Length: 176
Length: 200
View 1 (tube, each protein chain N blue to C red):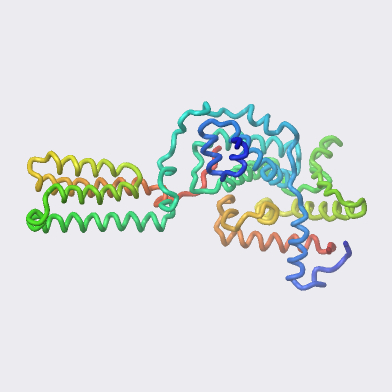
View 2: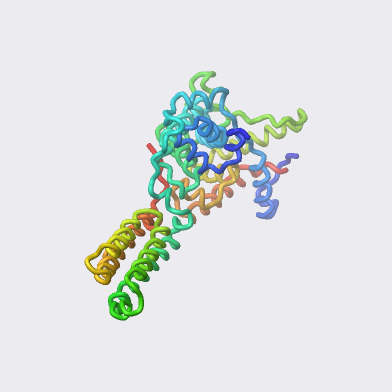
């Protein structure tokens, strides 16, 4: 099983294979009995059944935690919301002529609800503002215009806040 | 279906969630999963069983008391290995124990201390002759790993004994991926040189 040889006796790939073989034989070691109990005695855990404090990052869907996806979603949301606002402002008269304010309000609210779904939290503020102003504003057409202008930045801000963990990814933190 | 059955099949992240909610079984499941890998990593780094137990305990206490700060976008294993490795490296820096041999720490002044710092190579249940050869081989490899500088040692242990990916090792050690690959390459070259007289 064991014999002497010089490192140059065998090709590098064979030496690598042997090294892998040797390393693979190494076992893991067990700590002494009662190890887990000694640790549990030093751990302060919350009461079972209590609602844990969740960090905002944990509530962002896993896919959105990927920086590339996060940037893509945030960028798309900002771009499409800006377009929607500009388009709504430019075509307010035509829109008023063809659709009712209620339908427009519902469309804007739905769009921001979709953003809200993506951002998971916070965007509801923009959607709520849009729906409220569309419903009870001084005149439906002005309400929708104001709501759209207010809802867009609020929604995008909410989305960026929700995606912040992905967009500002930092190193793995170790407690001291 | 019991909760322990459920936990033993759950992903680390789910168990951490359960632990955050205060379930003791979840804490114990994390301990059950990681006590051997964490203890082995630290033991191979500091090469003193008693000290390794202390450092491993401190590692788990830190981890389990700081579960609220764990960021689920990282692997739990990366997090706990990082804390364990930091504990071992910090100790080595303090004590300058980075070149120990299997025969015990060079600064051991008593026979008890010498025995405590010997790395015990596990019995794998083979025939006496095979066992002897395996122990010799195991001892030689352990000694060779012990002669590596700590950064190389961490890389080799995480890669070849714990089977972690290069990416995860880079995360654990806070090193660029290229540096990790270089360290492993150099460490393997050193091990091959040290283990030259051994063959299958």
